Each structure stands twice: as structure tokens, then as C-alpha cells.
Amino acid sequence: MSSIVLLSGGLDSAVSLGQALREGEVKLCITFDYGQRARLKEINSSAEIAAFYKLKHRVVTLTFLRDITSTSLVNAGEPVPEPEESNLDHLDKMAETARSVWVPNRNGIFVNIAAAFAESMDARQVVTGFNAEEAKSFPDNSREYLQSCNRALSFSTLKGIRLVSYTQMLHKVDIVKLGKRLGTPFQHLWPCYFGGDDLCGNCESCKRYYRAMKAAGDHSA
Image (cartoon, rainbow, N blue to C red):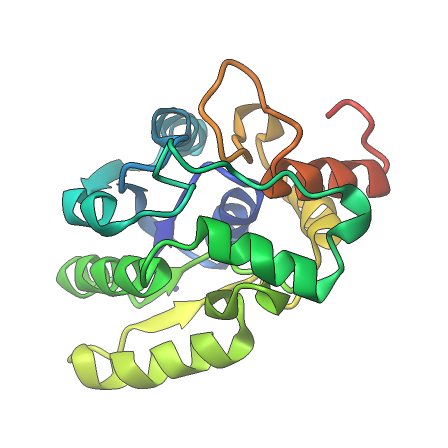
């Protein structure tokens, strides 16, 4: 099955890329620049991952999305939440965190742009890195969202492009384990909301990543 892969440089998308390569051909990896704090790190990380697999990589800039987003993932004037690890599975607290970093219709925009690339490049599917943990607080990671996207794509693409997520039913620890089996280049990942020299270790994304790595028996992270 030929794929276009949405690649952010994080754990879920990198492991999804590895699985997509097991399933067939990857025609292009796409990374989006929408003004997010970590954009330069994400772009560099994604480029390194694509190069590791000898794949084509393209950056798509969405200036309008930066301009209309006021939450902390883009707006440096807003604080990024730093939840306690003990709260990562607390639905109410994580829903509050999700609102703080929400980017308007981000995944919907990403999926539709990638579907346009897929249709033009004769790829059959778009691969994205959803996961079961974050689906609890981010509805655009959920199984229902993926199913709804596929219904919409059945109308908006003539070639019946499908949205696929190999990690959607997995928790982060299981994604780490899958990545180990696939040979994912963990040294190139950037699972952080910030764009500093090192992972901050305090944002929700870092906390989930470190927790998963330790639970999978990897204490090097």
C-alpha cells in the first residue's frame, strides 16, 4: 500500500512511518510549519528521520494557521501547561491542558492537505500518528474522528484516499515497543512542545514520552 506520511518528528508519527514502510511504499513525508514553538526542531527532526529511511520530505507552511491561533502551542505569550506525571491519566486535568495547546482544526487541515498530495501522487492512503492515550483529551486523535475523516474523504477525493493510523489503538509504551521492533531512529525524535537545545522534560508531550520510555524498559531517555 502506497502512503503519504504526516511526520512531526515525534514518537507516534516516526513509528507510524516505520510501520507504513513495512506495509508498502512511502511516497512522501510531510511536515507542517504553522508557527508552532518547536517548528524548527520538528522540521529538522523530520528531515533526519526521512533521510534515515532515504525518503522524500516536504515542509508545508501554513502562515494563516499561525495567524489565527492564540493558544500556547503557537503564542509565546501564553504559558504551556506542565502537568504532573500523576495527572497524565486524569481526564479533566488533561482536557484543560488540551484546550491550552489546541490549534484550530489542525488535524483536519493536515489530513486534507495530505490527501491532496496522496491523490496527486497516486498514493492510496495518508498515515498519521494518533494514539489511544491522547484520544481521551484530544478528540481529533480518536477512532471516531478517523472514521469520520474517511467518510469525508470518500466524497472529497476521486481515488478514495484513506486515512490510516497504525498506532491509534496503542498507548505510548506500546508505541515505544513497536518502534523498537521496527528499528525506529529514536535518536532523531523531537517529542517536545518547545524548540530549545534539549527536550524540556516538563510539557505534556515530554512527560508522556519519558514515562513510556521508562515503562518500556529504556532508561536512557
